[in-house]
Image (cartoon, rainbow, N blue to C red):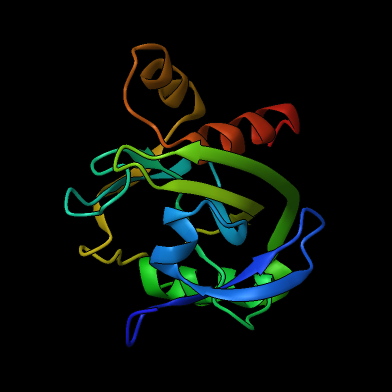
Length: 175
């Protein structure tokens, strides 16, 4: 592990912690870890769609969930979701405002050769307050209708695999 490197809990298929590894080691070797993704919906039912900063190592410039991030070693999943909301969008909310949509498991080879082997907890947040996104993480962001997002997907715009799974889950639940 590198000094100061973010640490992740390495987990079993059922999500039990079995080890700790650095961010780079976990991704280079495809070690299963936890993450969160959040879709923010406004009162019109529009999705706050973000576009990853071009300097991000994985999926630069791709569209993704309103918020996405890793769960730090020793951190509870719900706490990670609240932390990521604050870091990426400047939004502070209560835990009870997050609606847990369940977990997905994915194992994706990234363009840089790393492997994103994650158990991702999906959340929905209904929110109409002020958003101030972090430009180091997000290049652009705006509320988009679900119909517009479907058009973008069908026209082959680039979306992260995690967002496509979360959006599909929201469609199935008619959110």
